[in-house]
Length: 64
Image (tube, rainbow, N blue to C red):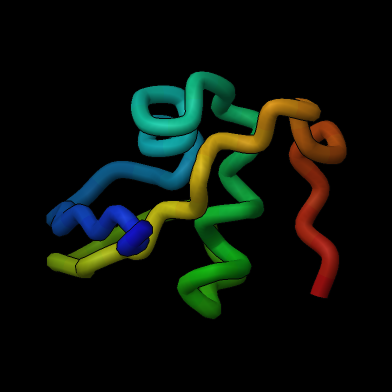
């Protein structure tokens, strides 16, 4: 299965995780897969989205 890609021009990873993964606390998964550390998006960017995590993740913590 090919990864899902979206293009956004502003917003934050919390909103995107809520809309596409069903949980705003999963923002860190989008950050990790795209090499980001800041959840705020400025300017246009294409993001790769991970598949939804049925376990619910780790509570929204970003591990480097």
